[in-house]
Image (cartoon, rainbow, N blue to C red; front, side):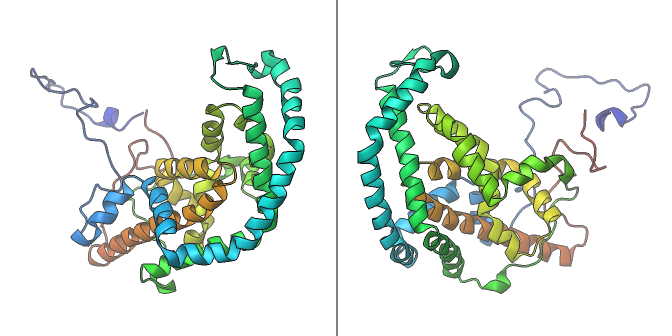
Length: 340
């Protein structure tokens, strides 16, 4: 039952719509926005605008990595030797196995067109302007060279990512005390049943589960022209965003339930940010660079989210009944049931 249907009208009241009036729920009604439903002070206006479009932080991360020497130089110094060794081995591997892999793909994928939808010159019946076996072989080898690079960079690139996050936060003039305890911003936060996530989804959040998802399950999908990279990014979107903000949640000492509620309140922001980040990280070879720039972008996003948290916490001190935003439209005040 919906909230609207529970409102009792007087028996003699008639609802009359004049010409030009809009029906409730029409496109002219303003869309509830949990971030901007309350005014913010002038010093937070720029952050509030950035928060409206989370993928912009991915672009900001790339820009800062390319232009800020304090971020790019330490990362390159840490990964330089491993990158050189990995590219050398990867180039040799490509020269030795390219034609073998191309023949393998042509034999097992192209000749199974009924199953894969692929043929020599068509993709699900559509003409394509390039050789499909060659394309699939290049994509496959690109992923293999990326794995080779990861093998040589496995420790140093992890350190480079952690330093990129820390240096980005430091560049904003913030220290460890900047991250304050979690403050609920919604008057009626959504109900999150963590038990429904299931064992399989939780397993994919582990390092081994992530490897199985990225390298084994989604790898065959990536061989499909164009659409493959988008499908892979779609499935990795929310997990990528959650992983990129793991340092943020740890800095605030948030409980698993608080993290789940926080992400649920901003689930579309996290999905579109994660989709953009996963799309870039999924690119062969060069995607490793984006794993560092995405950390920078995620840190910039976390910085703006934390400023919003500070604003809500300060308002709570002056007005205990203040809430940073109204509940999301699909949820009612019971926190547990959805409206009809």
